[in-house]
Image (tube, rainbow, N blue to C red):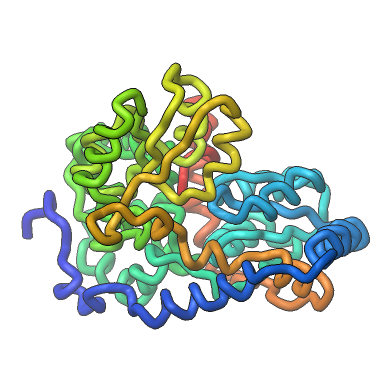
Length: 368
């Protein structure tokens, strides 16, 4: 087998795509969470959540892809808006005894892995990630067993069991230096689950990598031809692309990077206008970082590659004020990780964090 190529889904007996009914279920719940509020309902929810956070010694950490309401609430209550690993690290440094994670399930699990002594709650633990779904632990473990000469490197967007099977966990911000480090020691890499991010890392490191065939349902749909047409409309716009996107989209980018890297690029670059190929929830922090600039959603797989809203992650949108308040009131939706799994998973995460510390790299600012 040529280990410079991706494994096919057929070889692994994976479904050709993520089941559409799962996506539709997520969209239906997202619509319920985003339904119009009765007069005064939204403000009452916000005040109730703030009160419950105080009473329960809890802190809210929200991902960049959640709604503006949740990101603003996290900021206002002394919480944090970040990528998943930085969310977990913030939680470990914060004195709160309860972490409320607004995001998708692997983020809650990562928080629990790094903070076993704390209670971790989520507004909806059914909010998942296509990359996580694309990498079932039993299939992945068998594949790793079949390639014992490879070092197993997994992206943070994976479940606890997959992290436990890995030698390293990486974020997109630290993947390049870690893979270069492993390549310098003549290691062959088994990479999972995002094939596009893996291909991007491989193209820039030259490392021998065997790529798992997973993908993000949001980033995979960005279309180069649609972005080029939008660029023709706005020739002054810089193109910002997350590396979970297809190769022809990455090739158009003025800046390729993680969520945090793209926010920093929007602040740093002189362009007044940006075409952004990632989940548009990031616009909340982009506008905060660069309030005088204009941000355009990159078109994706809508009709003629001009869809204006398809880039929303249906699972991220399942998080809302309503289910956040209910979780705090009931204590439901606690995230638990079996201890033997947690101990194995924390080793692969700590290996990355130790590498980042030794090389003065901000590992926490780098994944989806």
